[in-house]
Image (cartoon, rainbow, N blue to C red; front, top):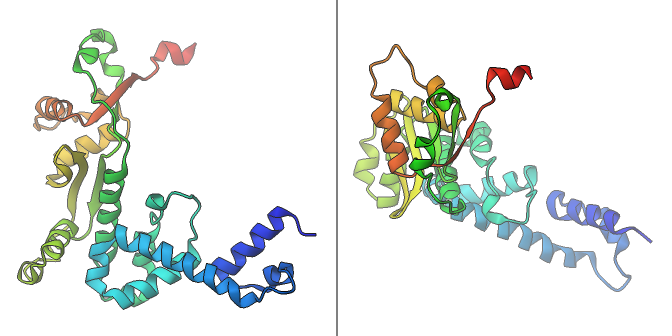
Length: 260
């Protein structure tokens, strides 16, 4: 008698790879292997639907038939590793970037990256914003050791194409606006976050984006500030804190603690 693990592996090969040889041998004599098609079709339809919900603009850009074909290939190559369907699709942008049938739509993977970030912001857990008074209580000699922890919905993207403009035009159904977008305008710096009004996508200039990216990556505040720049780091930091973009902070070890 096969073990539970052997049955699970055989069923996985049948669902994901379409190879029902092993699992068919485990079926009771009166059960036809054709009945496995029901589970395989449900598996594909469920994951394709999850991708459609997460990447609606990508689907509109390429059409339903193209999207479904790409999604089925993706599902076969990237089966889910978690039971949470809202976490499924993280590899889809990179898949589209390398998907040769999509070469004629070079900005497609960037739009997918934006949509994945929007979905991530939508499903991010709620947190209380950092109490600024806690920062004020840190001694002056320890302030250089402050490392901020970003609010979970924050995502920063550096993209080759104006994915935000494409995304908005497609959602609005504005073909004229979509046609007017300059795909050669250069890289864009985007901030995606969930606010009280919903998920927002903001276009930032390079230096403000880089400062926020360094903070969100865990660099200490002092290290994230470029002393050779005239950018208003203090006012930018105050704005981030007032808007609740950080949930907590920690102090990085001092040199004395490292040596100890």
